[in-house]
Image (cartoon, rainbow, N blue to C red; front, top):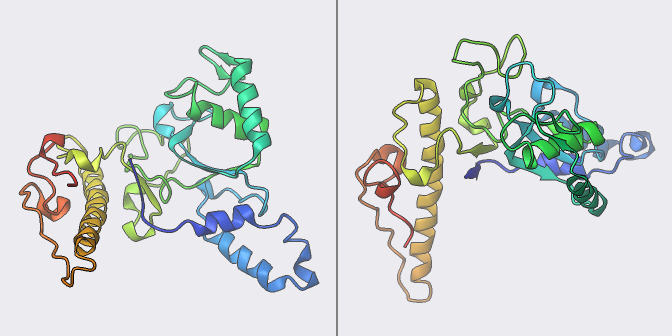
Length: 267
């Protein structure tokens, strides 16, 4: 239930850069070093924390502050988005951690990484792996640009910041064209044609934009399939616009009514 809106090449370029880049800048690698530094500046890190040296990053993720009380020290990784550098040794270590069973009820992995949804699984074990076992190797990306969920930054709109800070960024204000990926968790699945009656106005507005993007891509796929149907037949494929009447300005004719029963599936 995720949607990629922009390429994430910058993340991979910095992750896969040679660790020695910064040392060799004076040995003829200046231009390449410049390019990597420029790329690094485009990566939005949560709380503007410094990005680890290029080539030393093993994972990118966001955290799920909605699952904990403000100020909790060890917050879980959000399970809908994680990019990892393939590494057999790391995979083997994950297996050893799971088999060790060092998960304590009420405490979590290592007695510290738990107390929230998914703690026994990816949300807790990834936090334990990159924060406790290999600190500095994982990067928490800014959730206003990556894995965006349209969640309010504060408890109850005006309460404490969910990330425990005094001031917090409202990701619902991020321009759509600056967002790399969306996670349809609070917004609900697009193919459920969600009406979002109970959502706050600000959440509803950005969710409608996210759903609109999903259905824009759905329509693009349908147009492509229409052209493919007549390849070699001498005629240009005709796209027949669906006739769903429910919120066509967002759902582009693919919903007859609210909820999943109203969705018009691919044929």
